Length: 160
Image (cartoon, rainbow, N blue to C red; front, side, top):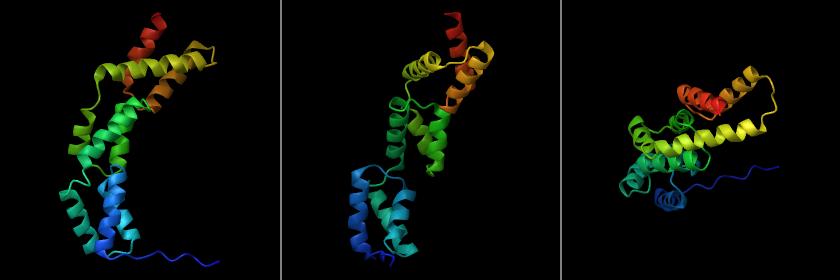
C-alpha cells in the first residue's frame, strides 16, 4: 500500500486555503499553524501567514476564547475550571482567557450547576448518604465547578 503523498502549496495558495479554514469556524493560532505546516510550508512562511491572517482578523484568539466559553458553559454546562483548562490546553493567552471568561453570567452558571446536580441526583442509584454525596461531589468537580459552589449546592439539596 502506497502512502498518499501530501500536496504542497505555495504561500499564496496556502493563504487562500487557510483563510477558508478560518472562515468556517474560529481557530486558534496553533490550529492554523499546524494546518499550514501540513501544507508543506517553511517556518518563515507559516509565521508570515499567521501574522497576515491575524491582521485581517481571520484569526482572533480573544473572539475564539469568547465563543469557546459561551459554547462550553451554555451548551455543555461546564464549570469555570474545566473551561480554563481547555483554553490553556489550546495555547490561548491568559489575557484572552480572562476576556473569554467574562462571557459567563453568574446566575446562569449557578442554574447550570443546580440543574446538573438535580439531574445526577435523580439518576444516582447509591443509597448510602455519605457515598451518594461523594459521588455527586465528584461528578460536579469533574464538570469543572469550584469546590465551594459544589458544597453549597449539595447542602441546599439535602435541606429540601
